[in-house]
Length: 507
Image 1: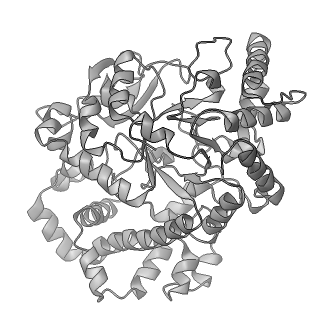
Image 2: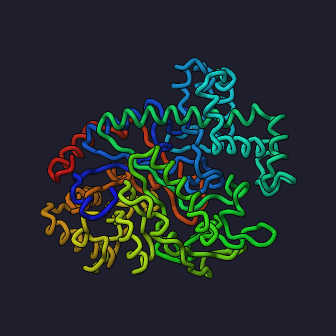
Image 3: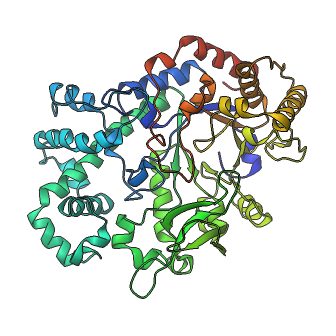
């Protein structure tokens, strides 16, 4: 993906599936980079799907959202596979198989992950040989070292925000060096989690690529207030007052997702200050991300063009203001890269202009298409080839829930528009049941002009509300916790998807 429209037209049509690592049916309460991930690659290959989209791989914090992390350039230790560590001689099966990881195979219990993952991983670390040249070289990588320092200090202060660390609240090199002399093993442990994660990730990605599957990653635009960046780099990156405190927080105004808007709470960037360095921090993030993914989805592209700034202390996002960001200027060194811009929301002509400058494909969502408006850009008849089209994203209700909940005028629009779009695309309309309507929408997605189409796996299974991944502007144990079971990957569905791909020239 990415580059000019001409480049996009030279690329084959492809289909892919959005499957968060956390949702895989791995043992020990959460999806990991082990056997279940390799089996999913096999499923994708058998289904004729060429792309696996994952959600951000960063560690999660309060609310369990992968879009709000304590460090932008590191990876979630929850995804490390214990069976793979056992094969390396770093763990014994009894050290993790007998633990209570949660009773519901459909939900991640993040409380249990927080309590138990570190305990098991420390046993592996105790057996790990730190004398190798590879480890010694890895331990010098700054972003993983500072993550280790940050997490070791967080342990020391019993999980409190870095703003409550007293003399350590703002990074001081000498103080932190003295702390590390006493707590070096704790710092090294957190570096070890990154070392192990990357080894497992690279092996999985190699397997996926060898089987014709590309992995599409996701880079959040913002970081959490309690993060390495706010601790160590805040005076280089964020809008602050004279006391070094953030003056504004990120969000979006009221929209179809929320009447009060979305108040994310992340500190906003000082773009004028970042420009002086040539956006060096952002360029490093992008280069690193492109190094671990085949395709990169950039979250909230609109926020690079103009961002919504809400005063600290606001109870909702109704009274924020729009401010200008760097736009396409930030991405001028990344022309032609395999990047997808998430441009959903209130798209102005300025956003369209800046996106056109980058050449990156934007996104369209079929759930938003069936409203009776022929000019709706989410309708397949209005698609260009250089886009990525979805049934829905992780923030949408599932396709089945969307169809089932449509009543009255909304139902009439859905049926009328779907019939018309199917007729235009040469897709046979079937709408006797909600399941048939969902299957019809998926066929329409496959038949569309979009070079790349993606759908959450929930939509292929016609799951209802129980399968929703996230409900924006809410904090709930239901968010980010849904998981699949082995039974969800039936060979019949795999064959149907493969046949659909062949019919529509996606293989």
